[in-house]
Image 1 (tube, protein in one colour):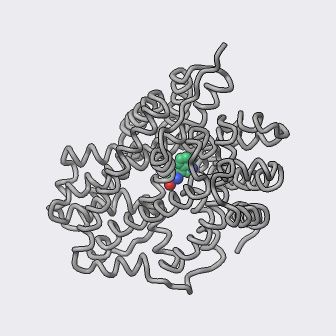
Image 2 (tube, rainbow, N blue to C red):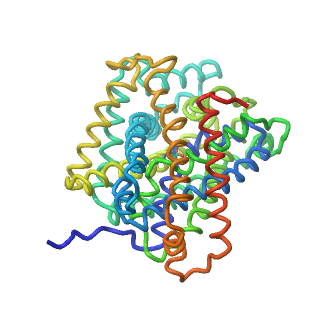
Length: 463
Ligand code: TRP
């Protein structure tokens, strides 16, 4: 019987947009700008850039190698490489991580979708006429209702279902007609929308203070813990350590430059995060508000509150949440593709069925566990509710551990010649110097740094 043909992306641009789509996500819209501002602005950015080059990019190159060389899903890849079965645990952990991330990420994406809908419906219009305390209370109660902490948990569950249906339909459509088409169409729109929000923010009086918060380097704020934060962020931002980039790379074109694409993706990702920060902080500061508390609150309560005080604020708000919805959706499709590729290739379940199986698991577990007021919504593991537990388990344990093992695997186990052949596209690219540099970093620097992040996040060592 003839082997069913495996789908691939159709061009280098498609590869770039799909990969960037995975990296762009909720992380850009709140986590990144907020962490930069609070950890010394330009000084933190500088450290973050170093982490991206010593940690993010080398791990991404390694995942790209595994994926494109084997052209298999995150578990099949290790069989194909004839590796000791132990290494398959990278793939199994990746599938677990993608499920756990989806449990809560689809919930937050649902809040974002519902904000777009509320914006179009005009739910926020009332804010512009209220005095400040009342307006703040109103945004707070809109936020509580959205998350299900208010009256009913039904609303967020419906939005979570809608997100899952959208993401499932894209993945069912396939690699070319789904992932490629959607990321190629939506990312340019995201880019234009964030620029529009930036122009508005920069033309406000007092926007300078917001820019200072974001960019002014304050090296006195840097300490061990902010450096650890930068490393963890580089990992989370670039969707590493959990098989996503292995799976996507298995669809890459043969001539894609696997050492250059990660640099382009990482720099574009930083740019979008900064553009998001420029859209938010000048506005926040121009109203004399100091960005404090969690990043979530900044996104879902401060942003509507202040945007609605501007002329055409509602349009701006819709634009802002729509671009956030795009980022969350393109990240989610790359998450869903990991288990779907596994089920369809390893267990030979057809693609549509695989999508339905995984989405149903995510929907059921998600609905029962992440909403306050749902069956297990108030259950606690240690000091965390399940929502926070999923986030902690993935960001602090599974992803760094996965990254550590990937660095060891590619650095020490994989045949050096095979690695060179794949990364140089069988000798057609001149990568002699960069390959040496990469080999050195992935063997001696990345594993040590990731191990430090890992031990620090578990508080086994502290800085
Ligand atoms: N990079 C995504 C963001 O910034 C989050 C993320 C982490 C992710 N791991 C992932 C997305 C794996 C897709 C796949 O929000």
